[in-house]
Every structure is written in C-alpha cells, then in structure tokens.
Length: 315
Image 1 (spheres, rainbow, N blue to C red):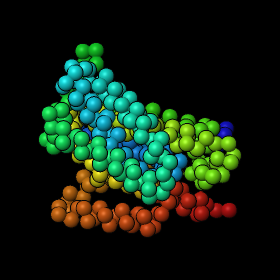
Image 2 (cartoon, helix red, strand yellow; image 1 turned 60 degrees about the vertical axis):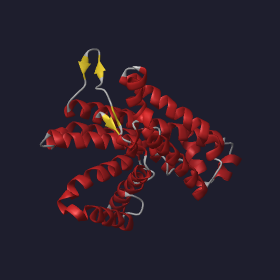
Image 3 (cartoon, rainbow, N blue to C red; image 1 turned 45 degrees about the vertical axis):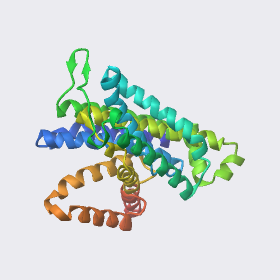
Image 4 (cartoon, rainbow, N blue to C red; image 1 turned 120 degrees about the vertical axis):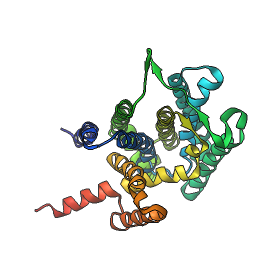
C-alpha cells in the first residue's frame, strides 16, 4: 500500500469515525447544531487548506466566495422562483466563474501583494451585499426558504448534521485524491519554488488558477449549506473577519494537513460556544489560546502533535 493511499484511509477513517460517534457524545439538539456548523466551516477551510497549504497562495478574501454561495441560495428562490438546491448549485458555479475570471490577473502577484489583492476582492463582494439593498436586503439580510427534496421537508439538527457531515467527507476525499495526484505534486512543487517548478515543466499559472477555483467551489458550497441550515443570511458571511477566521482555522490546524483544517474549524467553532462562561472576556481568552497554540505548536495542531509522537517513539 502506497503512503498516499495509507494517508487517505487514515484521514477518511478518522473523519468517518468522528461523524458516527459524535452524535452519541452530544447531549442535546443544540450541540448537534454546533457540530453541523463545524462540518460546514471545515468544508470551507478544506478549500483554503489546498490553496494555502498545498499551493502556498495566500487569500484574505475567501469569505467573498462563501458569501456568493450563501446569497445565491437565498436570492434564487426570492427573485427568480428557483429551487433552493438549484440556486445553491448556481451559486457554486458563479463563485467558480468569478474565481476563474479574477484569478488570472490576481495570481500573477506574490506574497503580500497577492494577500492585499484577495482582500480587495472579498471587500468588494461584501460591499455589494451591503449596498444593494433592493436585491440583497442590505445589512438586515434575507430569509432563505426551507429545502424540500421530493416532497420531504429537510429540517432538524439531526438531518443537517448528517447532510453536512456527508458533504465534508466527500470534500475531504476529493482533497486527498487531489493531493495524491500529479496536480497535487505540481502544486507542492510550486509551493516550494515557482521558478524551480517552471523549469521542471510545471504550468505554474494554470495550476495556481485550478487550485484557486477549487478553493472557491469549496467555500461557495459551505456558504450555500450555511444558508440552507440557518435559513437566514447577512453580509457578515462575506465579511473580512470571516475571511480571517477561515485563515486562522487552516493555520491553527496545520496548513499542510487536510485533517488539520477540520481540527482548526472544530476548535474555532466550538471554543466561542464554550467560552461564553467568561462573558465579557471570552474574546480575550480565545485570542490568548490561539497565541498559545501558535507558540507551542508552530506547524499547527495536527502536524505538531504528529511530530511530538514521532520524536517520542522509541528507536
């Protein structure tokens, strides 16, 4: 068995086991809702993990694609009379199209120039969602109709837990296969050195664009799921703080790790709920915990803990 296949089996097995066991460990429907939010955020973080951890391209405006997926799911039924699921799929296609359109000029930039350009894209999307009140509802947001599949009303935290968990598992499987493919090897090469990758025959511009579009699809899918799950969206889903939150999930979990993206998403989704005990100090405590993670596990939680286990293994 190849190392890539072994890694895929371990990661998918760990995620599958978590999806099965978590409902038995949670005492209420509220906790199942939080778990479903974890899977939604993890889906968006997976795409960003591919973009940042695999290809080495920084994005500070990723929430823009998240917002496109969420608002397309809400506005399709409201203005065009479309089915919510079809609207979500159109939103994913729109996010992919926008990423394809703006990716070519943006991805020519490097380092902090690329970060600022993607930040501008995210701010632009957020500005449109806030200012176009007649279409988007402005800062007040917009209602999302309930999803109905073949006459079945999709409702309840248990149902959405299962749906979001299955989508996450599928997204992780696709990401792991991408990592183990020739495209994944090309992305790792350009992460180390774009010049060396180009000399080795890698089409750098094409591969950067491909992973940028894939990351946008992941984010838009997660945004659509969030809209259907909450049945209400506001421009905050595309805000700058949302983009920073997604980046933090990837960095804390481990930029080069698919499982790390899920762990980072779980941490930043669950911790704010747990820290409400501290009332006015919850954000300060959350910030302190993030600093501690970065100081003592610089590579991220999953790679850092894996490294500790390897070093402590007896010779």
